[in-house]
Length: 383
Ligand SMILES: [Zn+2]
Image 1 (cartoon, rainbow, N blue to C red):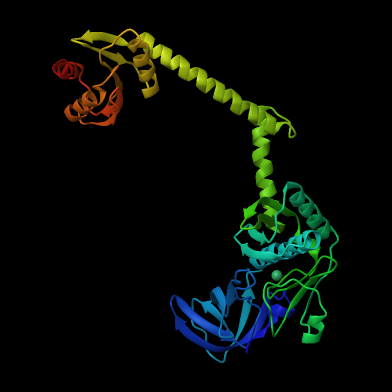
Image 2 (cartoon, helix red, strand yellow):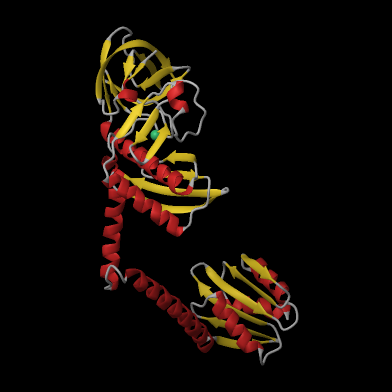
């Protein structure tokens, strides 16, 4: 059985250990040791990474009670090796994980809800609670969590006996029969957990709830803490500063300024569309062709052509075929007061490698070959 140094001292970064076994596996070697500071994945926290006797450790897992260190090189069985964990990575995870205990402890104390799901990603984590939380609940939890950080409460880890455990009020997802490990953040939370945590709550740094949403019958929150909360703040600050500069708005007024800008853009888009339609109609080069009307617009959209067709159709009962040349051929609309639009569209598509369609009184599409005299000859033949 490997001695779990991480269980009693989560700040152990470097250690010496004896290699008990080394077997080749898919993509490397599994090494077991007589003692280790490498935390194997568990309690929602990913495994440590680092180095072991010159070999890189990419993953650590528990399998049938054995802690397997996945290395990129074989190690000599019986030799003593020095292990070193990636401390920056581990510390950031301890910040996140301890912050999660603080938030879960506060939600449990304030609302009586349980943590029913926990997932740590690279920079953020999600925590699922068994009850509904609203905006002001979330704001309150976040404030209390940060106040718990300022209190710099001690984090104690202990292994209670069965009798001690039965007298203890603690949070736990599982009914743990043996080897119960308790992580207590004094005055804030008591929880069963196997992972390494900080020594004091103050080391968790800022705790920020980024988002929350209803999840099953409760609430899922997304949060960040420690170095990741600081980096997130720095990123948002820099982006906000740039937006403030672009809109000449103060920090307090920047959201209103963005909202106003969105309204202005929407109004301009609508005005532009209206002008574009009217310009298309003004510039439309149209001629009567047998019983039909054919017209050519410049850089017009389907909306523009449809507007032109509607305007013309008020005084013209025969089929109207309008086209606008584009990069690869032309777009077209066909409008008929009663029927025939779909048949004209099909003939255009067939003759000029096009696609599109519609209803009997209106069709639209795009042709790949644009040649006015060929198009007019085709239309004449159809009418
Ligand atoms: Zn934990």
